[in-house]
Every structure is written in structure tokens, then in C-alpha cells.
Amino acid sequence: MRRMKMLGGCVLVGLCFRPAYGPAAEQGTGLLDVLAGELTYSMEKLAAPDGTRPYYIAYTITDQQQVSLAATLGTLTRDDMNHRRILDVGVRVGDYALDSSHKIRTGQFEFDPSMFGFAMPTEISLDDDPDAIRHAVWLATDEKFKAAAKKFERVRTNLKTKVEEEDKSGDFTREQPSVYSGPTVSLAVDSAAWTQRLRNVSKIAREYPLIYASEVSLTATAQNQYLVSSEGTRLQHGQKYLRVMVSASSKSSDGMELEQFRIFNAAGEDKLPKEEQMAEALRKVIQQVLALREAPLVEPYVGPAILMNRASAVFFHEIFGHRIEGHRQKDVEEGQTYAKKVGEAILADFISVRDDPTVAEFNGEDLRGYYKYDDEGVPASNVKLVDAGVLRTFLLSRSPLEQFPNSNGHGRRQPGYQVVSRQANLIVESAKAVSLERLKQMLVEECKKQGKPYGLLFDDIIGGFTGTQRAGAQMFKVLPVVVYRVYADGRPDELVRGVDIVGTPLTCFSKIISTGDDPAIFNGTCGAESGGVPVSGVSPSVLVGQIEVEKRVREQDKPPILPPPIAQGGDK
Image (cartoon, rainbow, N blue to C red; front, side):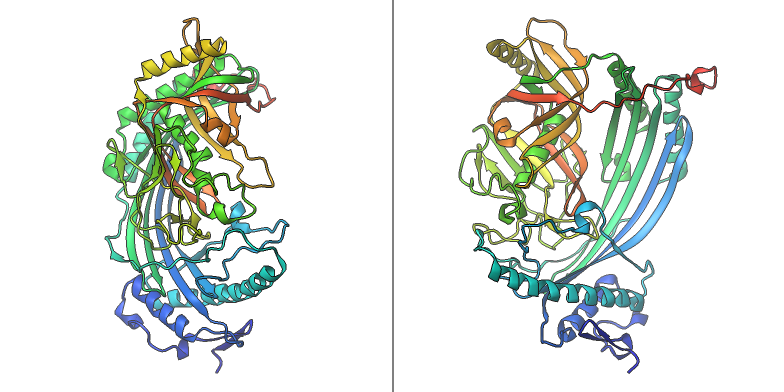
């Protein structure tokens, strides 16, 4: 019995004694068959000495292939190719009503590595070797089961010593199993051609000595996912994520770092931009950076403003989207801004918001938040969150709420992290849309009404962050990169710099006056407890009656002392 191991009180039998669940190794069957065989074995045999058994197990293998190329000043700076497989094992002890995932209320901070980017993905064999893959699954299952059993004991003790919980919902929803086998995907990037393209475009920056850093890059990922669960889910599906980015940065005379970029997203190689489009985008980005070097700093301000479409999409994502993620409504450490507001008006009555991961593109542009099944194997669905200003539901994973006992297909994670409810394609729609020209007129009218000499127009936003927990301030900060003063007396709009948007969500959303008729897309990657996931936002431009900005952090180092070499008569 050399292969018999006692690991933390849980007896697992080695592969030499394993029954032949599923096809034999020599048949070279797919990953789903290998996972299904190991799943059957674990569910039938896995038990602790005290009789504790898992009631649910799920195995996911994420196969990722990636190409990453980058160039600066006409030279190649990055040429990476990467292929890896990540194994995620989910084991639950207890039952659907109460299990090992239940949050333990301590009133104290407990370090969770996955919340701070320290998740340690389990990387497994790239070869389709069933025995090697089963071995990795076996070890990971043992570790997860022992942790779940230990956690479940703590959960039951915690419930006996703490006050009654507000949310009486269970810990895991009951869902119909999903079975789907889609085609796998692979990259078809001509690395040699793209390398030359990136060199050609990036060389443009040599013409601009005041641009201190610049880059043109291509990142392409082909991701295939294989998921089986003890409930009968069996999924195979693939997706591509491709991105071209052009960026440029400089430093103003007062030390402020200035950066601009343009990103092209695509779900296939045929939709990537042409060299001419990339060159035009880089020149525009450079011109914006140079203009910002000369732009005046803005002082703190409270007054009317327009958030242009892409900026508005980021705004809604950061301030609204994170607050309607379902798991935040039952966590007593969260601010639960909207937890008790279902059926109440939370936005202007002309605004509706939905999150629809089933939409692959909008106006011909690919959406990064598209998917068929979420990371718990639940089919994606179009969820109407706000209907004519009234909150109707939340984004839900398989962690239920009292009023909402089922998932709506929004359980998501980066491989190696724990699933929580997340945004996908957040779409803002308006029944009160006017032209951008009229929206700017309304901004001026609002400035005069409030006695303000100018309003602000936020043309682009780089991102932001928001605090949602009770222990911190219920506030947000959004980081604009292109801002204009729109003067009430008719003077030309003026480019300015050096401000961040700040505020609290309930106050900010109560000030929306009207929207434009110009919906546009922001594609990005959102980081939260379950890692970075691809997301999209679609929104029209929005006029708000009051917004607050504060001074941005400004670096204290002066620009470089010596002029750059490209200004010394080198190759321009």
C-alpha cells in the first residue's frame, strides 16, 4: 500500500488503485473526459474520517495562448509567446442552504491573498496526458476539500456566536446543468508582419522630442475553457481577446505626468486596425499630450458638467456597476448602497441600465464583456437592472439573495481566483436624448442658472476606483485625462488638466439632467476580488447638474535636464 496517503485526516488512494472511471489514458480523449472521470472518482470516494463529504465539486481548466509584441521609436521592445493551462477546483462542504463558502463574521480584518492580487494559479500539463492531469486534479482536490471541511466547522461555530444575519438566503443556488461543446479557438497572428507594423508606427514618435515615452503594442489571447461539475454541467467553449494600444507620455514644466493612449479591441484578427489607423491614432495621442503640456491647471470646482459617452460609460461602471453586484448586498461589511432599494427610483426616470453579456458587438465594435456561459457554468443572460429609473434586480452569481434565489449568469473570475458576481456589458439607455450640440447649450444654460462662469466637459477618462465597504468612505474617484472648460460667456472651450472627479454615488446620480444621442463603448479589464475580467460599458454623453473635482496628485520631479537624443540631429 505504498500509494495510500493520509493527508490531514482525508484518505485518498493513489492512481495505481484508481478504478477506470472515464476513458483510458491511451485513448487520448479530451480534457472534458479526463475531468469527468476524476470528478466521478472524487464524488464517490472522497470523505474525511468523521464522515464529512463534499456535496459539490467543479473542475475548470483554462487553456491560454498569448502573443505580446511591442515597439518604441521604431525598435522592438517585447516579443513574447506564452501558453499555459490553469486548473481551478471548487469544493463545497455542507449543503445548498449552508456551506463552506459562508462568510465568517469576525469584525476583524482577515487577509485573503486573492483580494490583493496574490492568487496562486495551479498550472498544469500542457500535454494531453490524462495521468499527469488527473494527478494535478487529485492533489488540488485534496487541498480544497480539507480547507472546505475546516472552514465549514468555523462557519457553524461563527453562526452560534454572532447576531442573526439580515439576509436569510442560502449559500448556493440550484441551477439546471449546462451542456455545450463549442469549437476551440487558436491564434492566427502573423508575428513577422505585426512586428514590422509596430516598428513602422512607433517610429513616428521620433519626430516629437517632447514625447518622453511612447509605445505601440499588440496583445492577443486565445482562451479555451473546459468545465465539469458534480451537478452534470459539461462545457467546452473558446474566445479570443485582441488589443492594439498606442500610447505617449511627457511631463509638464511643473512636474505633472501627462499620458494619453488609444486602444483598439477585437475578437478576431480580421478586425484589428490597419497600419494607417494606428499611425493616425498615435499622432492624435501625441498631439493631445503636447497640448496638455501647455494647458492650465484647474482648481477644485463644484458645478455642472458633461461626461462624454466613453467617459460616462466608465463613470457608470465604477460608481453604479460595482454597487449592484449581488454578493455586496448580503455582505455585512459592505456599504450595501442599494440593497434595500429594489422597486425604488435610484436614477432619473428617463434612464434604464442593463447588463447583457450575450451581446457580442455594438455598432460594429466588439464588446470585451461578451460570453456564452459564466465561470460557474450558468448561461449568460440580459439583465435589466434599472427600468425607467427604478432598480429591479442585481448582478447575480450562484450566491443567492432573499428576493433572488437564482443566478443570472454573472459569476466571473480571473483563473486562479474565487467567483463572485461581476459586470460584463453594462449598457446605459436614455429616453431623453438630445444632440451633443444641444447638450452643450444646456450645460451653458445650467452654468448661468447656477451663476458659474464655466462648466466642465470630460472628454475621456482613464479609469477610476470606488470604495464600497462600510469601514471606509462610500465615495468614488474617477480619473479624467482630457477635460475642457466650457465658458458661459461664449468664449472658446479651453483644454485644462490636473483634476480628478470625486463624490458619493447617491448624490451624484440624483443630479443627472439629460443625455446625448451618441452612445459609445469603453472596453477594458476590471479588477476586483475575483481578479481582472474583460468588461465593456456602453453609454451616451450625460449632463449632470453638479459634479465635484479635486486637484490631482502632482509629481515633484522636474522634466529631464538634458534634451533627448532624438532632438540632437539623430534619425527623425
